[in-house]
Image 1: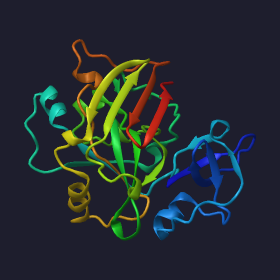
Image 2 (image 1 turned 60 degrees about the horizontal axis):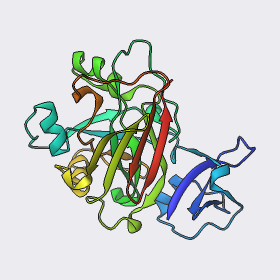
Image 3 (image 1 turned 90 degrees about the horizontal axis):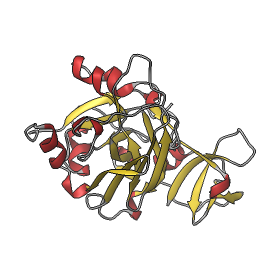
Length: 261
């Protein structure tokens, strides 16, 4: 099942429902995506339907309670940065206000001069702290702030620095999340081309590691890290500018595409 939050055509009232083929079908009972994640209810949506192309997709959960990021979690990405493989997951936090619709836009704060993309597989937590589903995310990063500030709250957690979606694909639809193709394009140029099999710490290991100290709740996100090909590691470095368009696609999960403003 693909759980989505959206605006029906011609409406400003957000609805939640199921993406089914080329339509989005609202939940007849008014449930939200978070409601469905918390309850585990997978009853097919039975409300009003609209063509998916006519609806505006929003972040599946507008402001998740917690967004955990994982640094340096692809072997090839560690190699391109010249770093050794970590012995344990490197966990940081993005603020709930960093959550943004899959279509963005991402607005670059005036203080930031080196804006970068990070295409990532996102884990979505359900009842009991278990993995309920997966989504596509961009862990937008201000590299200049990241390099000069030891804590990454401003560099990673700025408003709108986590466009994600386009929906939550439930875990039963993704039998092997650690063998998915992940690709990122900037203005049509392929920048990242990897598979989640290059993850150093897999999905289950990340959930268990975070849960050692933090109670995971339905709707929490874990961004699992980015593969090689980020702009900061190119020669010469290539950072995002106003008007650039970033597209991130993960096999079986769909794609997000947003502009930089």
